[in-house]
Image 1 (cartoon, helix red, strand yellow):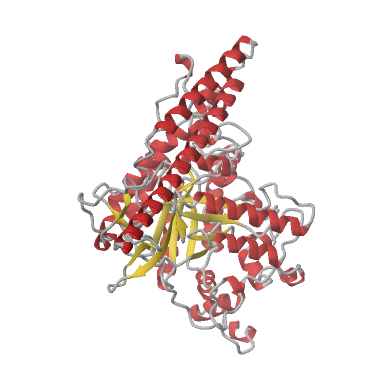
Image 2 (tube, rainbow, N blue to C red):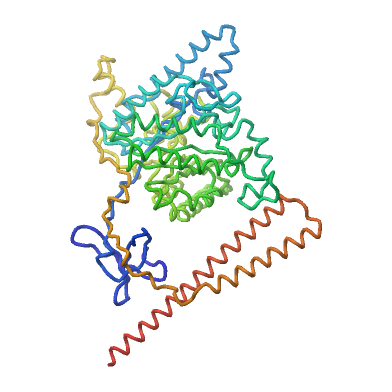
Length: 606
């Protein structure tokens, strides 16, 4: 930032290609330095201020949605896979011949996995500048059901198709195809044991049992005081200490994933859990948060056993929960950790009165969220779409979203492809269709209203062709379609493209940042002290105690409502503390500047 923390900064390149920041208009200059405790401070010696700046290639990618985990919204309505996997398993068990029904189900899912994604899709993605694929997968793609260390009760706790071996063969192909084109793979645990959110894309729409066997009943036992981190009023409201039922199985799934793919150069990152919790029914994310924190720490340690550079990603579904994670999974104890945010304009309640209002409110909201929360974690927009709710997406709508996403590490569109007789089979949710303007497996798709052209936001290869050209070229090279050349009218797609592979951040320890305990401490605000904070904290405590007493006297006995009030006042008090501290620091900085200017003037006169 040019202006931050009371100072104006000037980047200053060094001879070895590193960069340091020095104060502008401040003599002698102060620099940013790192002490022995890994804390950034202002220092007076330029040598201690040198650090490496690593260029990060922006991520441009797509999700392989509805592939290993069929999702009803993107599968044809009449398809035998148009239900969550646990529902399909229950139907097979209830059939007249359960064994035959189960065999047919596993074979059907295996055919879907084999046919849904092909090497031609990777040719097309590389040609259009997509350098990463996010692969949603379930625990059943990595572990047999018999190996789960703890099993709960309910429909989500069951074996699911297509089985471990077919799944791993498919994942192996994804890594081979990605690495051959300079692309990277982000593996995402989309379905955890027991289901972490009760949605079909977690494997089971009937139950959210990752946290507890009976999540709604267990969550109802916790008061709002406990859920928001406020002290409990009785022993029976204490936060449960035992871990989530599905945590151990999730850890084993991540270990199996790292054992097989942790050494692959195409592995960019691992997402620990997709969209945990819900905002409508229990359990909410804050019901599960203590168990999620413990699980994330354990999963992070497992990943670091195999790789120090793989990006570790955790997901927070709803923006109002972002604040609860500000202090979690942070440096210096956790490195290369990013926060995955899912920004869907269609679901965020934007003003849809006019197409222009959707553009304005979506762009403002997404910019605000990304700017606000990128200070505590690098952000990755792991899911987004071109759906604008009641209105058709316009070019301004596309530009507004992708312009906001530039504040993050990058984005992955949901999803790469859909089945076009599905509920949302249309360009706003189908990236290939949105870019090409049509899809080869739907003849009338050329008549569909064309989406705004996305190529201006993509590093598209000259001569890049629609998907069908790559499919025909791939079939011709394999000898599967002798007539393929007759359908190309003499035109061929360009050769397979090799992209510049994006890298995750390197380990902090290898940056070569000078560390010394002799670095001078930052002098700012040394004269102000803590007395303004003590006074404000005393006043806030008195106000809270008075409010509580008055409400109790008036018969305001609802502990949950009172807890919400207490939580609100607490947050406001903390915000006030922060503002006062910042104001005091600003006063101190200006005082130091005036004193320094005065001393410099006196020296000049002398």
